[in-house]
Image (cartoon, rainbow, N blue to C red; front, side, top):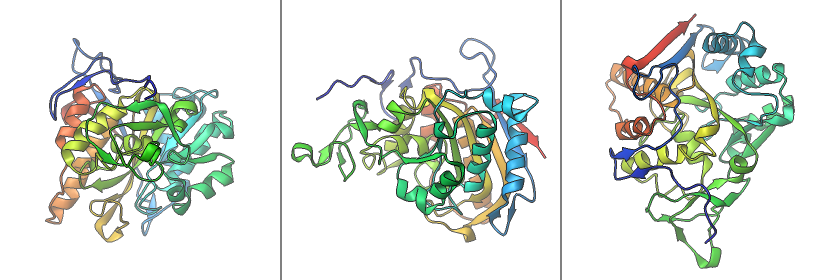
Length: 351
């Protein structure tokens, strides 16, 4: 087998037993280990007119993203705000969650506002990529049309192919390979223990902005900033999606791979609509308009707040949670990927 250049930089000994050794810290403004408690900053922008009968209102959303970026970065103008996150030389991948469609997945209006901001900051349109695992899903959700309008790119990580030299190998679970996986039908193989990273990440993107919907996931808790980018970046993922325990190990470890976690510059939760049941299915009857956008450098903090909100909405309707998977987020904290303690999350609300 080819040499895999990116071996995991930590040891996993079962759910709840991780020792971190140099994983990226996405906490906000604290000094980290040995100092005062790390705090994550989350900027929450609210506007009652952000949606109208479950349809995003682009002009309002654009203004919300602008206010959020100014608050989050402390800059006085939008160009400076975006340039404090990325540079015009970066190839910036906007990671969306498109499988459920434009109503329940990441809404194109939020991505459009980010694209506009990056273009205003001077990034060439060719250096902006809207991506998810499958180009088909992007097309169905309206993202290829959005890409065409702004002359930016749309790309599927699976469609780009996988890098045989870069893989997640730390998990012994055996998975059934499917068409599109790098080792599928290679020398007669039908199963494999490696998950290879997409060439889109290893050879193209230099920065990633995660834009995730506030949408429940029955095993991960939320289709958020840890689950979406991790599962969307590698192949042979069916082996992880059989149980909450498997996801609790795999998702943080995949996120910590240098070609993913170290490139994430910003996370934006599209909380215009909160869908608390349904997962991959668009179910607006199990949704509520929150008319919010959350911005942070900490993916764990955003996912933690997301799960709390999903639970609140279910509790208000006497609905059971399908599983919030606290082990996943505790493992992410132990690997220093972010903060899951609400007491350490600084929430700044902008109206």
